[in-house]
Length: 181
Ligand code: FES
Ligand code: FES
Image 1 (spheres, rainbow, N blue to C red):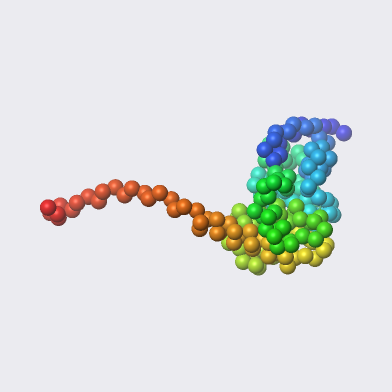
Image 2: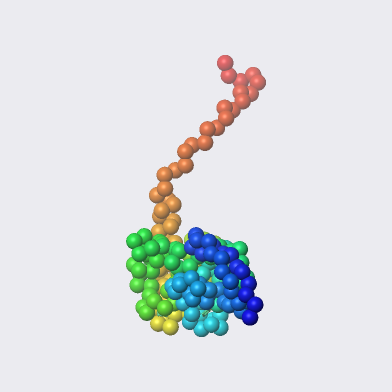
């Protein structure tokens, strides 16, 4: 089958690969780049285990052809944090026991970080709605939702603890004619 050249940035690294036009992004990530943190749970766009960020937005990478990602920026769970420096969402999942077997977790975390990017202060309903496309076979939704709300709270706490911006120097108000000394 004819090959197509695609160039894409994955977790900050540039890649150029020859791919078959039918290759799915999830298989490019896992089989060609060895990024196996992105899971395949169904291959039918139902489970969300394969969720990554494509140009900053969460997508199910089993629904995207690798050639459609040509020129794009992709972030996978490996690009979000590291063992030594967890992303706040990973830390919140850990702290709230938001996982059991962990199979759905990378996709949940990628979907949840996209939610907080769009809506930094979601309600419980917002979280449940945003994660509708991500299935957990261990049925651990309660703690997953708790983890996302915790990550949102921590983000808010960080922002309110940030030092206030320096005062903006107001231009001196013009003195009205006839007022003052
Ligand atoms: Fe992509 Fe299930 S593997 S949605
Ligand atoms: Fe097992 Fe979600 S933690 S599938």
